[in-house]
Length: 235
Image (cartoon, rainbow, N blue to C red; front, side):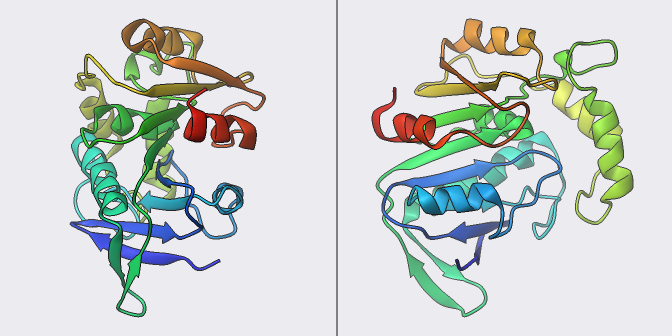
């Protein structure tokens, strides 16, 4: 499998061209780094879905400041690239082309937040083990304490995640979620100890999405048959 890199605006997008069964834009979790050997990349190949993975601005190969606004911009840039149907890959300086008829947005964990906030048109939005608000992730809450997580990233990955943890937490706390989100699917992990039930309940109340339960806990993995149903038939 060939791993391509395409610069879209200020965002580095890693691209895997796998076939003609749609295009998946992955807004990933943190920390998370996918390469061509990652099981999710292999799954997209198996499902014949092209995969576009933006590196959030302020992380890895993307320049700029890391914040919620720029995470949204990163996701929107990758969607624009997928919808465009062509791009200039950086290694060989050659143009790649792909079928751009269908674009699906897949937001995992932290990636669910910019997936909800972004405004580019997509065919379907899928949130997996979704983080959407700091209110559920403060000390003494039922969710993972994300302040501790961001502080860990600052200490352990200073060159990969270029931010100050306190600034990120305060920035996320100010986020206002949109009132509406169409064609929204939410996959929750049966044994997810990071995302509390209250957070999922809020999503249900605000957007009335289709809710699907998967066997695993807090992970990017969703069974093939569930993804096929969502992508091809919408359940």
